Picture 1 (cartoon, one colour):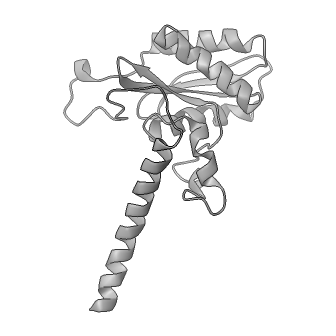
Picture 2: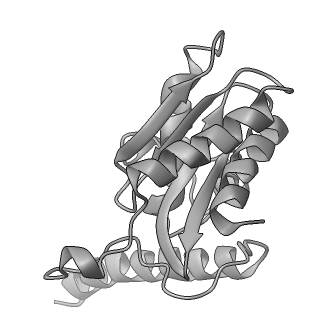
Length: 185
């Protein structure tokens, strides 16, 4: 009986460790300058009028703002996803790397799958020996480097933008231009 107790306790402790790690990781340097309800889902039974999401026209405008920023930097792939990680809008600028198409979408998905954490915030924990080692192999491919940023409107996570094609710093700069359009910054 005692051996069975240990086997049941171990998965619970692992879950608790991961939960504490997630809270600690968030508390130590992952300040997205966001407040309010960052729930990635809108709740079972909610009506369309109660749901918070990014509209197709907003997504297009966000991409246009990001494209304008990228025009003087490097051709980019720019994706906008809704709170569940589904693609709302996408642009592959002329001559942008084809290999970055999927990366841009996954950067955006990573942000919403982790309730608005920027994709790059997972990097340090994903190294060998880190608490989230191997996480990039989950959920159809998590991206743990910068370029995926949350889109927050009226305190609600409404989606995310993912940008890929340049350096990480360039990707983040272009993604931030899209975020700034939404927030009016």
